[in-house]
Length: 109
Image (cartoon, rainbow, N blue to C red; front, side, top):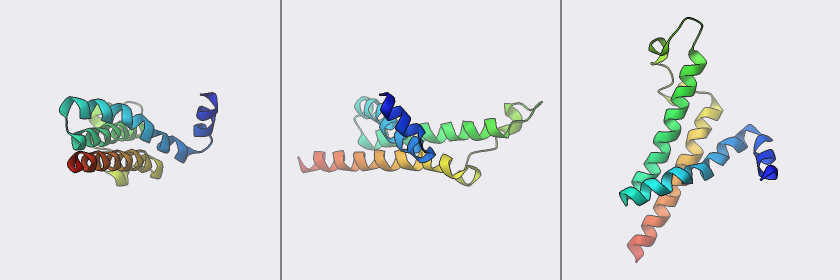
């Protein structure tokens, strides 16, 4: 496990890539509960999008400001840095690919 963590820490894009594996921990239960592969994929996008929104808010805070002062920041990807966008795009792409494959397998059955 230490080798994997060391590899992930070696480059920032690898952290974004690791979100694909983490996304399965969101996608699998959401899919099983709703019995909808697309809902599971959407749950991954919502999870990571909301995390980036929060990161943008925290980054925008200055001394003396509250959440009320920063709630408008970070809603859209062009308000994020490139790695924040990658943190959403990679798990979104992998989760929708998995959903499409599972859907294709279920339809072919």
